[in-house]
Length: 405
Image (cartoon, rainbow, N blue to C red; front, side, top):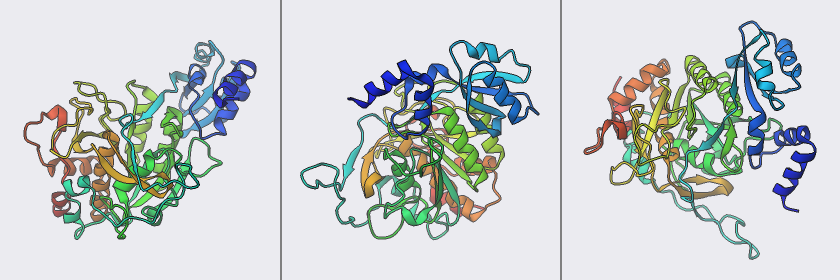
């Protein structure tokens, strides 16, 4: 029987069991669950026991604690969201949004996977000779490597995970966490996160590709399922883990069209913990005033996408919140299964900026998220013919960034 049909039957017969099963699987997101998922935010000083009691009093179940925003993610029965608000310990109740990877649909083109025994997706061939992707060259990363390669700076890839065995990434992976299913590793079952990771810190090792900051350390924070979607509560937990485990840059190649106070509060807490948050502007273009969240928040460096001709990519969201632009169309990088892929999206632009941030932090670890963002914008290159809403302060320039104090 089709797996999705089985899940639907389980939802009809045993809704609580189905919700529990969703916690145990890294697979496709169960969107039907959205109507019952909430983030319950509590008054300061509320104990964990009191939080749980408030949720259980209305027939709900706590799924996870969200310490940075003094909240819990919970499954609530129909109508219980209004009931729990009457508890004096409850400050508010927010939706547990579905957030998506910011990649252009159907843009993925794999390189290097071969067929084994007549079946696609078999063993990968010998690794290809290293090339420098056009985006890495465009942001002038190679010219900056004599000054900095991001050594020792931990960059959290808040995404679908990372291919933990990829020969062009493995040596730079310094840890990880799976917020979708904490009992499993942060290995990538989608490919998106591995692609992002390669642009940030692909190894300079003679094979495949090379990243902007080839000596930076990668923290694989899996918050999105294999279909590239995830719950906001998992993303918040991932941000909390990043800040608690030495992350200095959080790459968020994901977004939502909806604002959410819990999302903003979590990003602000991460920012206040000294983590520079870099996020994709979104792929709603051509449009104006359409930057997605969290890129829209003032604490975040919002990144738009360019093509190889220094034009704004047609899919790239525009708006006054855009801070920088970076290569995002037809970008080649690492991919799940030990191979490589070309992808497009503001997802692909964002890690160029995160890599540049790591390079600068390796030179000056005392920079705050605010002063680092200012340095990156001050040293960017304005692109001719593009508006501020398309490019912000311009194209990130690693050479100039690392050459200035």
